[in-house]
Amino acid sequence: MVFIDDLCIGVTALANETTQGRGFRRARVITLHSRRLIHVPLRIPDFVNNIIQVGGSFNCEMSSRSRLTKMTESSANKLLNGDACNRTINEKKSSKNGFVKSHCLFQQPHKYRRTVEKNQNVTPSSSLYKKPFVESFEETPLLVAVLTYMGYGILTIFGYLRDFLRHWNIEKCHVAQEREEQKDFVPLYQDFENFYTRNLYMRIRDNWNRPICSVPGAKIDLVDRVSHNYNWTFEHTGKVVKDVINLGSYNYLGFAENTGACVDASIEVTQKYGVGVGSTRCEMGNMDIHEELEQLVARFLGVESAMTFGMGFATNSMNIPVLTGKGCLILSDELNHASLVLGVRLSGSTIRVFKHNNMQSLEKMLRDAIVHGQPRTHRPWKKILIVVEGIYSMEGSIVRLPEIIALKKRYKAYLYLDEAHSIGALGPNGRGVVDYFDLDSKDVDIMMGTFTKSFGASGGYIGGKKELIDYLRHHSHSALYATSMPPPVVQQIITSMKIIMGEDGTTLGADRIRQLSENTTYFRRKLHDMGFIIYGNDHSPVVPMMLYMPAKIGAFGREMLKRNIGTVVVGFPATPIIESRARFCLSALHTREMLDTALQAISEVGELLQLKYSRHQQPHPSLEWTSEDSQLQD
Image 1 (cartoon, rainbow, N blue to C red):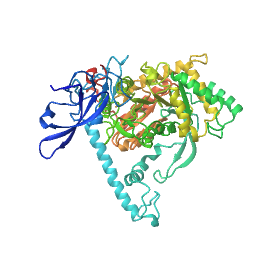
Image 2 (image 1 turned 45 degrees about the vertical axis):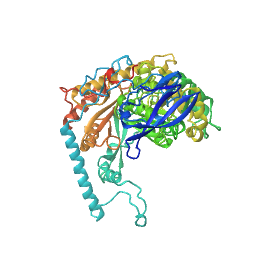
Image 3 (image 1 turned 120 degrees about the horizontal axis):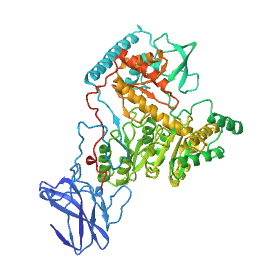
Image 4 (image 1 turned 30 degrees about the vertical axis):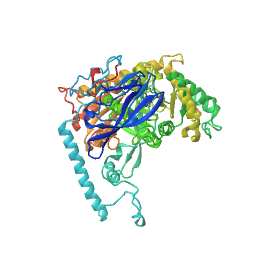
């Protein structure tokens, strides 16, 4: 142990630079003397590197004989740069993201591990969860994966063959092509995307963009259409397919309807205010009904203030760049929505992607961000923003919000929560994933959501502290340049939200929330018992059912429509190329008879197309881990 009078020396970096073959390494030492920081160059032999291990934060206490203490090594076993070390002086709390409080995160070695097989009913970090958290992501059978790859391989081979025939005018080419004089220009489409569109997507294009000629309720009417050139163009036959059970719309609480209190209120507002506004909020488009909506949203979410926008996609893509910028770090879930991806890219911040709902991956990135800081300069990040969704619309999974909030608090980061699919659809009071886990809304810095799902309207919102909302009002592009929300849409949101909150004097909102929960549990359990592989959380109204093979994407959608069931099938690029699926969205308006009819049709088509891949005798792989694997508890 080394003693130095009247100095507290902390080794903050060991540069991996050997000096002229002498086996020495350079280090920069910070000394505290008379309240001043003095940079002293030292030359440290290599053997000292085996003694001094640089780690997290530590306290420098002024005394007559201070010690050069030994620190434990970081999780990555790397020597840290000078500005990356986290320090606190005289037990004072440091800045937001750069430093950690007096205790050291690295004082004890932590091993990141995940057991291969676990009971999916085990709740991770039981002290953070008040009820079981069950999610299922059954592994793709090996034979199915091989056959799926073979199917795409065969389609690719035939695609190149057809491109060859089109090139020599043997087969008619319907795709748009660049003119001869533009051949030397930069191509408008990426080669593979264009190839995929004309040779794979066109074969099953009839499953999408189907015209609807009714209210998108529990049942819908579809316009019948045919194609005579393999889905390149369509013609309407003049017929209408009646009473198709709708398992594709995001009408979770059933407020997308043409009768009832919401419609009556919207008609009354239309007669008073008209349909359009014709201006932005900051000019002549700010009405009293807009302010009433924002106050109601803030009260519904339990936050200080809220702001509404006319488009849900723009709520993410246009506001995230306002909140972060250069020198900031965004940690984004790998399955975040395209609006979030666009927003973080436009922000100019450094982006790092963590594995879906994997707290080990997120915690490791947070630790590395705190320890190493910004690239090259190693200065502390200005902000660290964690971006997640409440319900992931392609996976049916629910965010592990209690663990993320615990990590956010520990590492002094900010949290951006997108509740587009969870608001109204989760929680005993319909207040989203925060209500579902019985958490405090104040623990989420930025609460975002949309009115397009549970409220049967359009637009989005952001809720949080008053200072945040006031800042967005003056800097958000969506607020400054976008036209205000139409008054009928605003009234639709106000009425439906008051029904959910029970302020209409009825129990209609509570009944619909309960009915949606019952439908979700029943539908998921029946599909699982039939032998289908379904993804997601047991309480998620988004139910993905795996199809895998490309030929079965189109076949499933067509066979279900023959049985008067409207479904949504999803494939690449919305999903990984071998994880094609059908996605069912449940509604409170679905009766038990409707669900049984749909389940019977799904079972018949599943037998026909051999879609029952699940292996019940084998445990379902899960992303869960026990509390011993996490560092969320001090």
